Length: 423
Image (cartoon, rainbow, N blue to C red; front, side, top):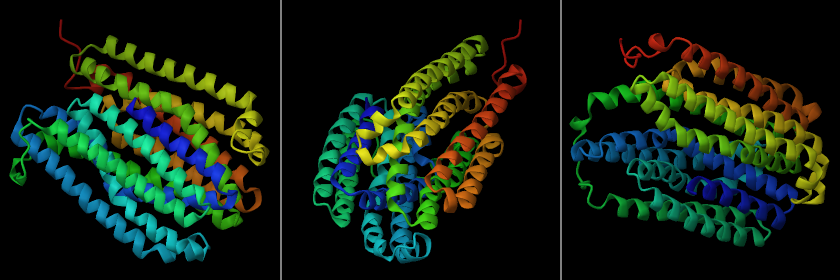
């Protein structure tokens, strides 16, 4: 419920913004809001994805739990403030030098105010998961999602880019405040005070930081700039914000198709990890196969629907979007490939091959995407950006499949400390 409410509120708010703003204005709004989101995500260095692990592991050890929470919180605050400062100070450079649109300077300065809130929303969600506060997380996500949609819609109703950006900042800040309130309630009785000791960091946490968080953070440094650069290069090479608006819609629809695979992987990953730790490799493989087959089936059905009814689906956003029906059909190929790759990453993570995944899948994918966008968007515009997604998704799938087979193909070798029990 938390995942779908968050993604759903983002989708609905963008849908309303599309209806209330003209194409060019929405294209600018989409690019600016994505810039703030990616800035927060990159500088947060994947702390949100590992907070839940630390908190869950040390739930009964108050000293270590306190250290984990305060260390992650302090890092998030520092990264959020750094992101705010960087984005605010470089807004003029980004507007004039990168987007070639000086009028974006003011909105970029305004949206920088949301970076701290967006950063804390990521860590607070992970913290609630680690505390098993799923009911609180779902309730806070639903409430904040509804309010976020209402605020963004009110800002977009003015028809002005600045008003829409201010609404995005207010909605993002309110989201993090509501999640913070839910987290404080969940923390009551957990022995987390206002003081912690840096010396309490355990050796297990240091190893976890090296084997999981650092490669996960580096993966973000590779992936997120690529996702930001694609619409940015498209804007620079075409000077057509209407194309950016259409790209944003196609990207949202792809995200909807991939979302079930992400939720399935999130739900089944703990079971797979537990089976691997117990040496139950047959059970682990059954979980992996279930995840992959289910993700593929759901993504394929959704993608086929969007491909068949591409024109009707895009008409929901406005008749002018139907010119991109072929591009939507192409994007669905990328969506299915990405959904399957997401399920394969369960095996890679269980085998602790996060470092290998960067070089085997992420780097080839992002390089292919950037080369295509840089080389062909001037001539082919939106079509080149969509083809870049398709090629990148297939490259990522091939790399993830090869690495997952390599990880699963040698049980006792891949997991030296989790091998099958001796007879």
